[in-house]
Amino acid sequence: MRPIDLRPGPAGHRAPVTHVAFRADGGRLASCSYDGTVLVWDTGDPSRPVPLARLRHRRLVNGAAWNPADPAVLATASADKTAAVWRIPERGPHSLVTVLARHTDDVNAVAWMPDGRRLACVSEDGRATLWDTRTGALIAEIGGHAAHCMTVAVSRDGLVATVGEDGMVAVGEPGSPASAEVLHYATSVEGCAWSHSGKVLAVARDDGVVDLLTPRLECLRTVRVSTSAARGVAWLDDDSSFVVGAYDGSLHHFDVTGEPIRRMRDPRMWPRSVAVSQGVVAAGSFWDGPHLLDAATGREIAGPSGPGHGPNALAVLGRELLIGCDSGAVVAVGADDANGSRGGRPPVRALDMSDSPVLSLAARDGTVYCGTYAGQVVRRGGGSRETTDSLGAPVSSLCLAGNDLVAGTYNGDLITLDPRTLRTTGRGVPHAGSVKSLAPLGGEGRFLSASTDRRVAAGPLHDRVTLWQHGNLVNAVACLDGRVVASASRDHTVKVGLLAPEECTPAVERAQTLIGADESVKCVGLLGTPAAPVVLAGSYDFGLYCWEVDWDDGAGTLASGRLVTEFRQGVSCMARLDGRRMAVAGWDGRVLIVGPGRDGAVRELAAWDIGELVERSGTRPAGHAPVPDPQEART
Image (cartoon, rainbow, N blue to C red; front, side, top):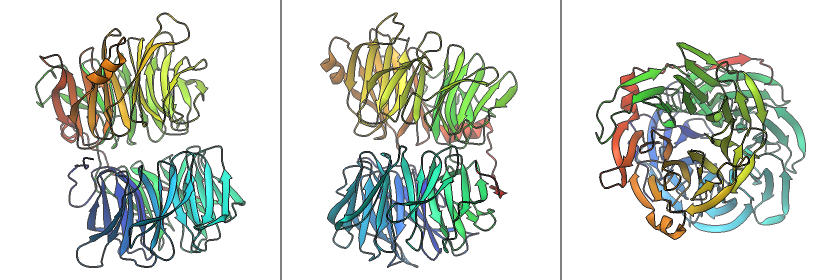
């Protein structure tokens, strides 16, 4: 397993902040990041957080927890399939105490038992495990979910709560199966937190609701937070109120009766994680550090110092490649001469699109569309810019299909809009999960969709058919000339299929499964012709892979698979420039143009750095202060 190599600066992260955890006294804050590091901050003066230590994993870091019995000890959870225990003294260097390495999948979260010795871990394979951190021994399996187990929380009395994408909430005392309580929801549950008294468990649901439950999982109160997913939740020190991070880009503060106190909004904020201590609220960020806010007023105390330009989306506009970034920047790069000039200085310009992270892009006839984390679709063309109201959730995918602009959301909605006015013309929910990717299929209004429900579907908005299913969520889908479909999945595979010609209802004539990546496959693209397609796929294992498909010889297709190149972080997105060239971007900030070399094999033709492109474009993402809305009504 190659380690992430993003070369962070001295004072911040090089990728979004995924998790925040306060020490009980509020004097230290751990921030975890996609850059594979944990920064420990001195927050004794929260208006001037000072980085004290940088801890490194080999993959992105999902979570952290301070030891309740020894405030110098911190546990961290990583996608490198380990949990680590560190000693962070008040003065002097930090040290690694132990690594808990027998996990079979990404570790999503950790929580200490009250004794400060045992550590509960939950992972992507649905397992909940308990470890002895002094010996490194696995003590027991303490629970299991049918899908990804996302969060674990331990009460002051030692009750362990786990929640997962299967909608299950489980509470029990380790070693006492008879004490287990289970509650099932029809939606994913990805956040939970015990009150400090241990009497109330808050669970954050993907349908935008937080339930307050007793230890026996009896519902005390249901609080409507947002139309978008509720993710992180944390209690104030006196248990009189709690703060919820939602995927509408806001922090929502409620009193214990469920009445709203205020809403805090900031386009830089990524509130998938929230922590509270000593009247200070911390939240994750798309920028280079955590956000610190005053719980009493909602005002920012301190914030990140600069943007990160991780590329999330690519599209083609004429002879330009469009790149959409975490910072909200969209840059247009001249790709006409990218045929072997490794690097160079192509023409570049900035497009004023959004101050929210750009998750998806589409373009046609001189007009650019972007989908944002704030849930809006932005249109820019003809010298003007229009923006929709929020569609209710982050817009994770866009495509132009016939006369429709199709938007797919984190909530699982498929929404058609008029490309000229952005007026909503239709809405459907054909998937039982988030819509991760869309691609035009050809024909009037037909398109492909890929979802966390493991399915790839095709057809118009209200008459969709399933082409195939993967063994795990589907990250991306691509189409070639309306005949060839390829999809990329977290099950480490790529599927490619040939559709029957001239069928009103899309039907798969031939299909093959391609292997090669060692981790989740994030993006996929197609070059060549329907008779002899070339599949490109980028993975979280940092590799860009290529297969030459032979429809008559599946074994030959597998044998053709090879590694084209490697990035220093996961490969995030790709877009076909023309029949011979593909643009590929990685979260390490590199943007490559690949295509056949003189020997016919796909190789790098040009390479650019997104930070340098953004700087040359003149993009200057402005800093923002959070906007507190006192007594704002519930969304």
